[in-house]
Length: 367
Image (cartoon, rainbow, N blue to C red):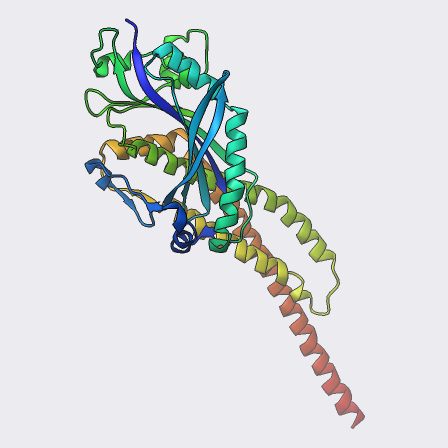
């Protein structure tokens, strides 16, 4: 049976632009663009608590050429208080195309250079506008890419809408995994385990780089909201993991340099290093905790299950465990250096006491 679908693709590109963003100040800076503090709106979304909802802002429209066909695309952004900016490019699919045409359309958008150029242009403009609201502005080297293929109408060749069983039978491998050859049953189970359906006419399939969301309510974007939030959290974990990776080798070199340095008071050799370590551990711990607590799941309902699956798929726990191990190394190093500095201070104090005693003895003998 030939399927006819109506939908679009949303390309996400997420960047860490600073340590934190003051969202109240950002609202004022973006006032002319009509920013909003958007939350999930479905009843099931009450299971998700968002302490500081991100800002959503429309940035305008651009022209994107895909296979010699020009598409007018909508560019928008979502801004998170923990320093992440998500640029989104929404590309409408050809009107009422076949499933094969939709699949070909989606595959042509994978890493499309035009999308990259549009995102980089708007990232520069947006960060310039947001600069006063961003603390410690630096665009990190790491970023996250994600693509959501959104379908709000699926019909058979007789014009009748399809139910969940027909939707579940869709061949999504070429679209989501970019594979042209048929996969084995074992590979399908392993690579596409995250399938969700709540009503008889919806479907969500998650992978590491892409997701397919079939949802008849065109304005219902809660699943996309959850996936974007999970990607933003993943980016922060990756960013701080990279920062700690760079810090550890530099730290060992700085320790050796400090030990070779001659100082009047040996206990002060590590003072600057200890101060830097303390600030690094405090900043990393505070921000990682803020990222993880930005969205809380309080019940096992549909959106909560999708969010939990996304975190599992993105290996959030593994990234957090890696960060914890590196922070433990920094804490142990701090304790070691602090102990060494304390021992040097005690030794200096003992020498000073002995010197005073000797002086007292000499003065006594002279008298």
